[in-house]
Image 1 (cartoon, chains in turn orange, green, blue):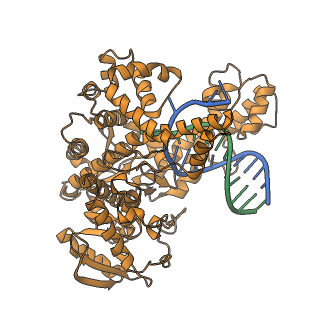
Image 2 (cartoon, rainbow, N blue to C red):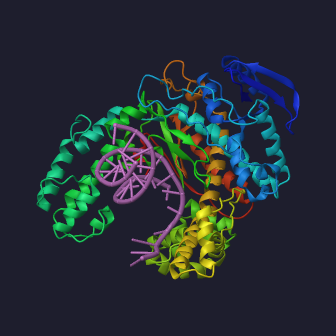
Image 3 (cartoon, rainbow, N blue to C red):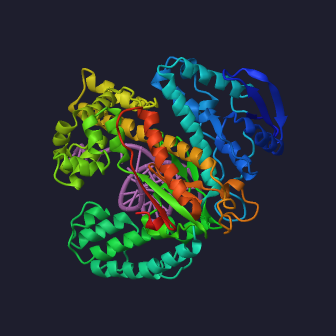
Length: 575
DNA sequence: CGAGCCCGCGCG
DNA sequence: AAAGCGCGCGGGCTCG
């Protein structure tokens, strides 16, 4: 499945090894939609150069696909994976499949849809003809077939690819978002709306309070350097204007200043301008970027979808007759670490309970807060503070888990590669890093050279230490979502559910929007929008999917992945 | 006046 | 002086 230059799509049928089985056609987009709808009866695996560019076309036409293989995303994994390091693909010079995807244009305001695609890309570089996709697919199949433990890579590529389908579906569906509620919320916090560039009443009042407390009537509280100078002039000794540092200072300016910072952030990041840019027909359509983070986590582009502050989640409200199933994997990363390292003691601490509470119950530390900060320290590489002090106790109780994070850190410090459970490997540090390490071992190296090299080595070690945990957790989350999607696939729509309320999206909406579907994903948390009558069944599916994801990654190793799963009409009520 | 940096902070 | 991981985004600010 590739694009040709003339807005035609080339479609070919292949067997398991990528060999052509005869069918080879050029179709217009409309013809392709019909073709895809027909072909879905046989549940083929669609091989796409870039799911994000093609799938929205199908979704807009009401066609949903079950299985896919995304060449661009899978290439990125195989290019770096240690398990396929010997393959032709991994050793070929960089080419078209190593390039960043073309930037899709997200409409910032009403008038166009979010799904406009750029004009077709020109043939990019050498060998970018229509054969290129097929050649690449064969190279990927070969890289997997000849890899160590091909089953893991195969699962990873399938999970990454279904993630691309889900990402497109979620962008298409959008997160239900009530502009009216959002507007009321902003007005209550900031005061009535004012034209862009002006401060709403509440912010203006607070700015006046800040100026009065500092005895300076010209201060712009939005300028950190200016603010810092004014604070120091007023006898407030601080090295920065960070909220957590200001919090500890006793001075009349602190209270209005902290309040100002909070509200100014709300206005600039999720204020009226944001609302008008991103909310269309009471839906938020962020652009998800599967594999957008080196660890395999998703990123988003535009709208800050992965940073929705709790302050505004009250605007996320289910349609009439519908509700949300909001599920969150409890202490996901430590559980992943326990399973990765086969640390049965740590896994046992999390059995049937809050993992941090289990650590306390085992007598390792005194409080849940201590357990949490110690675990985060182990996974992030803390060396000082409370976290650093608690680490030895954690290491005594859970030697296997801590040995694994330490080994990952040492590997990174040497410049070595580490890999996740399913085989996504970390990038190597850049040339500057290598140069600095080399310089520190040469004869004329200064103490400064050595210090610098050591510091950078430790930085990279903290990255690789975290990579194995964050990346494996991202794989669990992909499998979880894939299983949820599979479970939801066969649920009935609104009509069959015996609920007469309107279907979301209005007339002509995609039929899959009339049945339960995923509308949001945030690293270890999902939201399913569902007819209220089906919410219990959805919750059962989501819960079972978590257990299945655990088995897919870790087989029989006895580690639990419990969820907090609630049925709520507003996201604000989720926790 | 735009490009690109830093700062600060939202999320996990 | 160094400092627990990964991101995206907006505002200020500097520089060409």
